[in-house]
Image 1 (cartoon, rainbow, N blue to C red):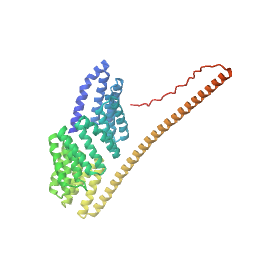
Image 2 (tube, helix red, strand yellow):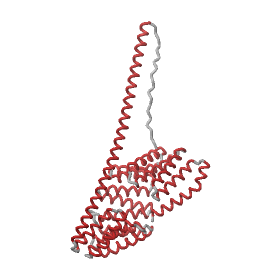
Image 3 (cartoon, helix red, strand yellow):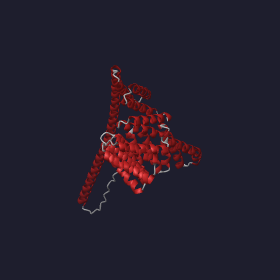
Image 4 (cartoon, one colour):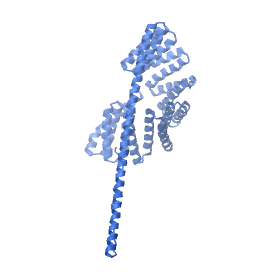
Length: 433
């Protein structure tokens, strides 16, 4: 719902700037043209037309550069980074985010610099580089605290919690997430953001090793309350399922079933097929724990078929494993064996894809490092050549002095000699945007 609202807002803005676009072209209003193309890019991004969005963003950047509007260029470059992040191309995302940072530094745009620090930190977190991610987020925290920009600060705290969660430090994750929640409750009053904080805290308290069902249920019920107030049905559907998982862990099966079916109905209402597949799996799992194997198999099978149509291998694996276990519970060992083989095959496929992606990421990293090494070597070679040239010029100068002094001694006439030295060329570091 929230994303749909954002999409509608962006489309309205795009239409609003569409009409003046022709006038801006006629008037040669360069900055305004850049703004129009930037809005068009955002509207395509929210519709997930990433290729078209990049075209408009690059066009916007051309106009902003023409008129020297550094903040505009920084905004556009940052938007390009967001797109590459959405595609999972974190290396390219970092390239654009760092270019945006350079622009904001030139523009002395402190808030923009804070946003860039935060975005770089988030991308490094997604890459699995958690400690560097934390360093960038701490830089962002300092800027937003100083500027009293409460919502960006809350977002940074939230993401610091996310980094610590990935580092398997749940206590620190809770600390930062609670800071984010407190900032939103007392300063920015962002209910959608509050809901996300409660989701995160509910997840941590549901994890093995940190399980506290009382706290988990409290936070998940807060999410439900906030989602009803904001109309966020997507988060509402997933939260009902998470609450069902919590009750399942407590063996409160009736409460688990009530909540998972609520999540299933909302998922159908918003046509969230992946949510439906997950809801079907947990419905099957609850019935399996109730010793109702035939009902469990029904829901697992429906979930498997839906996941298969979506190409969702993770959900296919969960549901096929559920079918195997439910058949084993009812002593139908042949079907149980068949589905165990199927789930194992799916699991192997998932691991194979993960390994392939890891290889591609390592290859990309290697190529980037190789390219940087080549650049460094070229720079070193250039410095050596410059040093050799300077040495030769100094030697020639010294020889000239000796010859001149010798000539003066032979002739016996005092001559004031003026020696000219060659100026060395200075190289400038170039930045490409």
